[in-house]
Length: 110
Length: 113
Image (cartoon, rainbow over all chains, first blue to last red):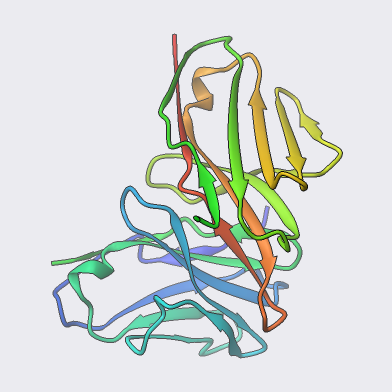
């Protein structure tokens, strides 16, 4: 069964540092998403991406965040200057009809 | 009002019990409805889609009432492996024409021997 792959599985970073979270969506999917889940809270939409551009973003997705599709397979989420409150699980998803989620990156900001 | 609202639980039930989860959503324009399962610190995984006519998948039955904006999930003959958090998820069309999933906070189920 096709999978969405995310790396790394766990990232620890110091406050103020930049992090890049990586995702390889399912190859024939055209829509890509990032969601985040703070520990003990609900899964929240961050951004959707289609045709090499952002199609929608949430209030959470401020200027600290950016997404890119640097090549034909990878889809990245960059956080420029991490804050303590950015600590969360970050899930990448891709969809054609149904959604498939990656196993997530646990980001810990210290 | 929250976009998708669920009772957080936990629901503690013995093996073999029947348990029901409820969910309400606020956006009447929502188009598609799902139940996802999430194990501790794992990604959400689709359990089943929910249709107005009601649908069943083995021990799981889902119902949708569009008029009341209410979704339910019934699990019969609970197994230990059913222990997880069950997420009510609604898909809507945004102003841009694109879609997003909106998640409830989830209902935690603990099935004990």
